[in-house]
Image (cartoon, rainbow, N blue to C red; front, side):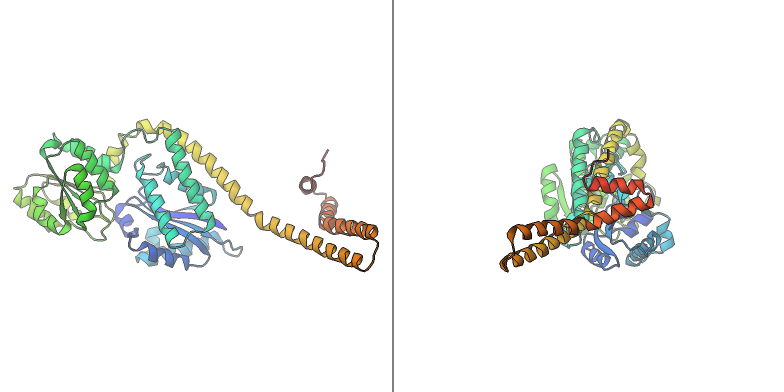
Length: 425
């Protein structure tokens, strides 16, 4: 069994590709089912966020198949699923095997591989991806142990380092951008589109700056109402956005919609109604919620999640020292996990060895009982039982010792001596 991690992220692929490789929440179950039908795939977890799409897999080992063949098969599945060209995807794709895959997941869960170093939201997203795979019965034993271990590693990193000491996140970066453009947020109206975790963080950040009015637009009013009550916002539906967009000075959007929610024509109408007063639009979603052409309109300042990168960089200095310590924890924990994983390879061998020894014991015991039942001398029968049992049990190890000595293989000879509990002095 081999552990694999493959995917693309903000470091390897532009948003234009990442948004085409995402798996919507509604498609995860079907995607997992399709993935498990691929040859050799024994278990899988699909992690899809605005900054990354990754597959974590346990794959059956086949001696006649090279890694390149397995890679090609999985890339083809990914491209067929999303109707993409393999050449385009391969340029941005990364692969990790076994120890590297273990280390990668632990780094991801701990926020060490995020656009925002140490951001905590990714751990919740990893846990959700794992839960979805559990629900679809797509998790193998090795993958389950790996993910549970990664959760504990992420907790250890949070506890033992200052990786999360400063408020740095995509949501925080969006609010920082708003504060840089508007002199005072207390004089602006804000429209938030979506009601997920990122928008919740944005709403709380902006609420601390006492914006004049906040609207939250969401597909279902019920989902947004709890957040709106917390931050004193008004709830509207997605259908209301066209009519209310002109009221907003700042629009921040993060939904899971497969298609843009705010189009160029909608923004043109809003700007006309505003008499071309500027609008700041921050699109955190992948796929994008706001048509990219909006950024070409006069007085519409559109930023994507990639544009937030420079803002985020200014807030990372104090986390870099903590990241070094966190990387050391990940290295230690990944090595421990791989040692456990390798030990599982001996379980079947040990079970088989014990089973064979027990079969020999049972055979010799049955013969001894039968001999006694036929009137044989008990002392003689027991002596013969002990002699034959000893010979049967030491036969295979004795042959291996003799062969190692005959071959002059001192290393194997010493390993056998150690395995048999013999004194090597």
